[in-house]
Structures are given as structure tokens and as C-alpha cells.
Length: 193
Length: 193
DNA sequence: ACCTGAACACCGTTCAAGT
DNA sequence: ACCTGAACACCGTTCAAGT
Image (tube, rainbow over all chains, first blue to last red):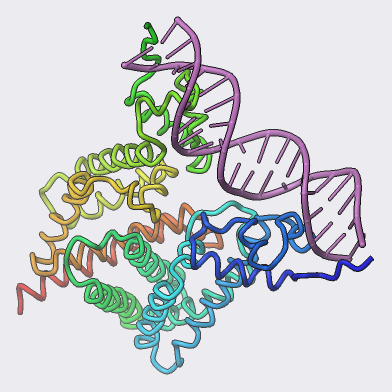
């Protein structure tokens, strides 16, 4: 009756994250995860219910890391500078974990979606910072403008859509300035009106 | 020596587009395409070199359709209203062809990328309209702001990331206004400066 | 209690054999 | 010239059999 556990749920998830970054989502197979942790594929099912739960666990883990990186970028003193620092941290995260980033923002089956609490914690700092600029009534619209732009930019940048010409860093800085300015002016006109 | 062709490259590509929209990119298998056009999977390889070329053909076909929809939305009279009409047409296209849209903007293997001419023709009207607002030096940065925001918004909307609360149509209108205004002010300050 | 090989129903693709 | 079944190397997942 031995059969001591050769692996664990945590080891499976963290190993799978490494494989995801190295080989992309299509290269992340149960067989490769199994080989990496030192068992055969069927044994994984003693620790995790299947590929869907593995994907959800990876996504929750990455979401938490991203949220922490964004929170660390804002010092809470000035909303304008916080927002541009958050945007830069977002881009830095996408650059350093491109496959995880792609997975996080790709359309995904319902069973892969992270728990709402995990997702909300990660976006909290963005909504709070936008709210400081636009005021509470426009906070959600403002946060959606900011996240749409930032995610769209990174999505296109990682997909290689910006390869035609022009300085991509400069285009990002231009976008940060324009979006931040737009949100500030919403808040200002509200204060004035 | 009969063996009359039971299908054709064009039929294969257009049938594959329908399967893509109905079943998503993972549901688009060579076997399903073959069954739909009335042959067995190996016969497809007499008409198209493999799945990669099929994907590239689909992507080029969708790209052309999207470009035509965007061009049709602009009448060339007023750049501000053209830009918001283009944005609305972009969203309408994504809503009516969600799976094709996802495929178009997803990271993709090099062999799936549409020819540069096809891609450039599709974005031409966006760059021209942005250029009319910002002036030529800022046209590319402006177009990148606009396309990043619009694609990011649709990507998040189609992925179901906006389900928490709030009116999504209103958030889109807010974004169109803010981005268009930002681009206009770049052009104005340029004229003034 | 966990691990394993064998099996099942799928993929994309190749190829020799049919007409 | 095109179509076909069989085969190959892969998937994810199940399950009976081992310890």
C-alpha cells in the first residue's frame, strides 16, 4: 500500500505555468505537465480534475500576480502619476509574461474563468485610481476606457500588429498621456460644472 | 480516370468560415470541413496545402470584409463623425462575426498572417481619418490610440469581462467621445502652436 | 492512496491504391 | 486528376490492475 505521492496540486500548477510561458497554450499538454513533474498523465487526475481545472488554477495564479504588480506601481499620492505608473506596470507584466498575458485576456471557456473575487481584487486598484480622476459616477466608464486602451495596445503589440513602422514606446507614451488627460478633464469639468 | 472534383478551394474556405462562426476556432477541424463539403479529410489536401493555409485564407477573407465595412462607414465629409462611425461599424462587425473577430486579433502563428497588402488595405481608412484629425506627424500614434482602444474594448466585451455592472453601450459611447476628442485636440494644438 | 499501461475517441497529415 | 482507407504520431480522459 505504499504509492507515496510523487507530486502535488501546487507543483502541477506551478510547473504548468512554466510550460505555458515556454511553449504557449497549445504546448501546454497534460502529458508534458506529467513528464515534468515525474509521473504519467493519468496520475495527474488524482490531484486535479482535468485540464479545465488546471487552466483555471493557472489563470487565477497569474491574475493574482498581475494585480499585485499593478498595486505595487501606485503609491496613492497622485492619481495622474499613479495611473501612468499602473499602465507602465501593466505593459511590463505583459512583456515579461507574454503567454500568460495572452491566456488571461483571451476569450475562454466558462470553466476556465477565475473566481470573481480573484478577478475583482486584481482590477480594484485601477478602478480606485480612475475614480480619483473622474469622480465616482464616471469611474466605471473611465476604468473601461483605460483598461480597453491598455489591453488593446498590448494585445496588438504582442500580436505583432505594430511592426509596420514608428516607435512603439512613443506610441504607448502618447496613449498614456491622452487617456490620462481625457479622464482628468472629465473630473475637472465635473468639478467646475 | 474520372475522379471529378467534388469540391474546390473556394468552397472549402467559405465553408470553413461558416464552421468557424458556428463552432469557434477549436471546432474548426479538417474533418468537419471535409464532411461539410462532401469529401474525406485527406482529399482536402488536393485543394489546399493544410490547416495553416486554410487559416490564412479565412483570415484574409475576414480582413477584407472588415476593411470594406469600415470604409463603407466613412463618407469622408467630416473626420470627427467619420471616426465615430468607423468605431461603431467596427463594433457592429465584431458583434455579428464574433469568432472571426477573435481569430483576426488573436496572436497567431506566422503562417496564418494575412499578406501585408490585405492588412494595409483594411486599416487604410482608419489611418486616413485619424490623419485628418491629428495631422500627419501624429497620424500613426493617433491611429494606434484609436485601434488599441476599440480593439481592447471589443476584446474585453466579447470575452465577457464587462458583465459586472454598468451600461456597456454607454461605456462605448463614452470611449468614442473621449478618444475622438483627444485626437481632435492634438490636431488643434498643432494648428495653434 | 497513488501510480501505471492499455484503451477510447479524437486531432492533422501522409501515402499507396483505387477510379 | 481527384478520392479513399489505412496508418502514424499526437491529444485528453477513463479504468482496471498493481503496490
